Length: 413
Image 1 (cartoon, rainbow, N blue to C red):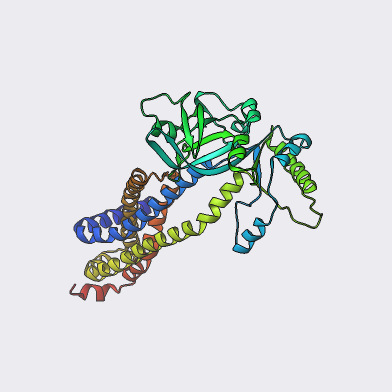
Image 2 (cartoon, rainbow, N blue to C red):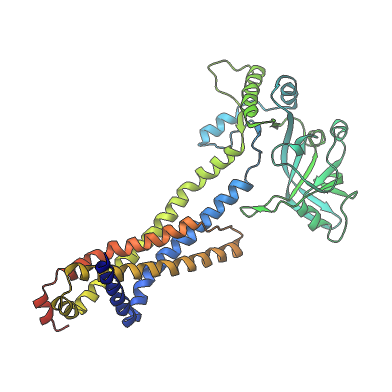
């Protein structure tokens, strides 16, 4: 064991000496692995950061909350979309029926959305999210926290009052240096008094979550008409209760909408997992392609190592012959060249990891796409680069170990 350790240290020393004596060649060999690992680390960091960000930020509903809507969030074809267009709209009467008959539902609200322009004085913002909501909707799903002011009340909803809650972007852009509370803004063609300002939520995938105006759903229907579908939002006390509540809601709605036992639901459920699954289905193919392309870069780096090692074996044929003549065994020669290959690829992997992390951070700073380095991915990257070096260095090392000592000594190289 001790003798083997001596041989290993000797092979390691000779490998390092060889790499130092050919600095330019070593750098060019490292370059292939560096680019491969850099690409993989940068891509994986962005993917992991984006996944983590989406799974935390894209949870529009809490663990115990769900929604019911006319359209499914995942529509696979035009035919599917056309079929869903034929479905009956969900109405406020449906919501009221659920409030009476769903015993596992703790809170039931409703919302409806539109895109509008908001004005205050000479300033205006286009394409804001106008949402008509019930007085309990701020407690369901992605809970609305207020920075100042009050929530919409049942009285606001009952009397269709012209009051609203605005997002942080609206407050910042329309009222710089002013307190928006109590002021009136024009939403579309209607004036609304600001009674609340939402806390800033930030962006998700580059889109602001603070560019909204909430008004009572009754006021929304009064202005834009009631002949439109709503989304029914439901909160339950526990995750187990949510499953029971979903079955109760399904039973009630199917009864109201007169669906027979062999007809499918003409409405769709939405949970946090629904949106995460939608994200996964939309991005999984893209991520796989990115990883595959990055892996090809690492493969090219391995081929570069093999080519350079073959050149090195040819140039050092006489040196190999001398080593064999003074007692070096074939496995000593094999180990020397394998160690060289592993050191080159491992060092290239380490540099690639550092540069990949820097690139991921640059992407985050310039595009707001989050990145996240997982220690496990760093370890895997180093091991992968070392394995690539060993795999592609095996053939040159084996070729060097099989050289005939007499013919190697006669070499003029």
